[in-house]
Image 1 (tube, rainbow, N blue to C red):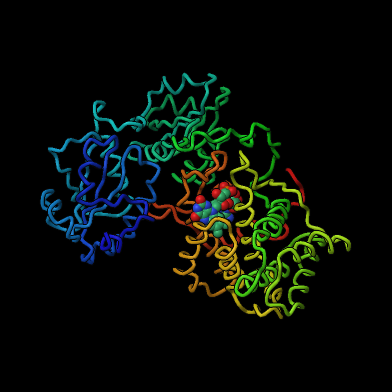
Image 2: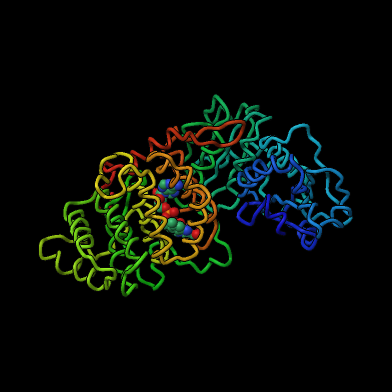
Length: 527
Ligand code: FAD
C-alpha cells in the first residue's frame, strides 16, 4: 500500500484496489468499473496520474453507474493478481460490466488517445453497451426519450422537475448531464435529438445543445444558462429549489429544513447568494471570542501570540461597523500594552462584555445566521462564518495594501493566511479540519507570493474542502457542496477546454474581490 500511495492516495476520488479487494469489488458489482492497472515505477503511469485523478473527480457523481479504480502491479502483494488478470503492459485499462461474473477479466481499452474527454465518452458508450438485463442499478436511461413522452409533460403537474437536453446525435452533453444529476432527487433528466423536428418545433428550440425545463407546477420553458456547456447545465439543475443530493443512509436522520432538530422551528430568513452578510461575520466573531476561545482558561506562549496576531489582523482589516471595529482596536491596544506572558481568558471576556460596553463598543451576543443559516442548527453557522471572515480578510488585505502598516505584518502577502492557519490549528474546535487545513498549507502555502495569490489560494483550498465533503454528513442538503462560485454567480469564471471544466482565474480573482469586498457586505438581516 505504501508504494501505491505514492501515485494515488485515499484523498483522491479513485478507489485503490489490491489483490485482497479486486475480485470482490469488481465482480458482481451493481455498478460498472473502469480500472487502471499501473506500475508505480512506470514513467508514463506517473505522468498520466493527474489525468486519471482529474477524470475520477470529473465523474465522481456517476459512481452509482460506473466507478474508477486503480491497482498497482509493482506492489509485491499484487504480483499474482496482475498475472492472473494477464496484465503485461502499464498502464492497462480494463472495463468491467455491472454484474460481471468472475469468468471474465474485463475488456481492455486500447484506444489511441487517453485524453480525459475521450475516456469519459468511452465510459458513456460502455454504459450503453449494457442490456436491460445487466443495466447498472441506479443508472437512469441514457437513450433519447420519445417525443410523445416529453410533449405529454406540457402543463402536467408532477412532484419533480424534468429537464430535457436537446442535442445532436454525436453530442455527449445530454448523457453527461443525466449522469451528473444521478445522486440528486427532485428531478429527472432526459435527452432528445435535434433530428426530432416536431419536438424542436413544439419546444421552440432552434439551436443545440439546449435544455428545456418542465416545472412541477406544470410550467415549462427553455432553460436559461449563460453558456451552453455541461457544467452550466448541471450546475443550474443542482441549484433548483427543491432539488437535493440524496441523503446517504447514515444521514437519513437529519432534521428537515426549518426545524432545528429539537422540534422547534427556526425562523427562515430570505437572503441573496450574491451578498455577504454582516450578521454572519459578527455572529462568527461573537462565537469565536465568547465561546470558542473561552474554553481556554488562560492564553500563554504560542497561543497568546496566535490570539494577538489574529486580533491584529481582524482589527486592521475587518470592514465592519464602527462600534465593532473600535472594540477590536481597543482589544488590540489592551493586548499590546500588557507586558504579561499569560492572560486569563476571563480578563478578555470582561473587557469585551463589560468594560468596553460602557463606552458604547459592543459586539452583539445574539447569533443571527443569514447567508450562513442552515436547515438545522447542527449545520453551517459558525464554520461557514469563519470561511467567510477569512475570505473577506484576504480580499481586504489585497484591496488595502497599507492597512497592516506598523503591525509587523506590512509587506507580508501571507499575513492573513498564516494567521488563519495558526488560528485554525490552535483554536478551531474541529481538530480534523485543522489537521487537513495544515496539510494543505504545508503543501502549497509557500507558493503564495502576492496578496492576490493569497485570495486565490484560499478560494482554491476552500473548493478542495468542498470537493472532499460532497455527500458527507456535514453537507446541508439545502446547501449542497459545490465548486464555487457557481456559474449563476460568475459565468465568466467558467470555461471549458477539451471537454474539461476549467476556471478563468483572472475572472475568479475579480469576482472574489467584488463578492468579499466591503461594498458587498449587507447590513441587513434578510434580503
Ligand atoms: P462553507 O464551506 O462553510 O462555505 C461558506 C460560504 O462560502 C458558502 O456558502 C459560499 O458562499 C462560500 N464559498 C464556498 N466555497 C467557496 C470558495 N471556494 N471560495 C470562496 N467562497 C466560497 N468540515 C469537515 O467536515 N471536514 C473538514 O475537514 C473541514 N475542514 C474545514 C476547514 C476550515 C478551515 C473551515 C473553516 C471549515 C472546515 N470544515 C470542515 C467545515 C466545512 O468546510 C463547512 O464550513 C461546513 O460544512 C459548513 O458548510 P457550508 O455549506 O456553510 O459552506
